[in-house]
Image (cartoon, rainbow, N blue to C red; front, side, top):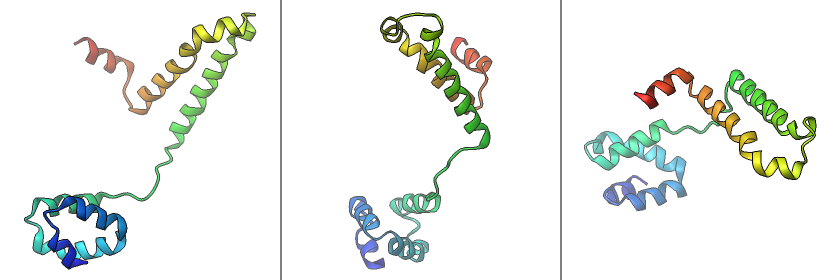
Length: 126
């Protein structure tokens, strides 16, 4: 494996195919080989890629889950407005579907990025 990496150090497409075919063997061989090839830019990129690779899935924090549930509940309340206000669904939903979904998605992403509305408004106007 080390010989293949050395032979194709200038061929990133081959290295990518080799990595995808034999991930664990590639990682071990590259880690052993890296001190001798660390001056190559391609080797530096692969080193950064392999060192920062994350296998776990991030499921979010408790606060993020609470926000998702809260905004989902609020979107559900907005969707039921036609029943509560005695508006025919065929008149309500085509006109207001965007107002049911997008404001809550926007709020979720604003809060998820830990930015306040004031900061966003200051950035957009100044």
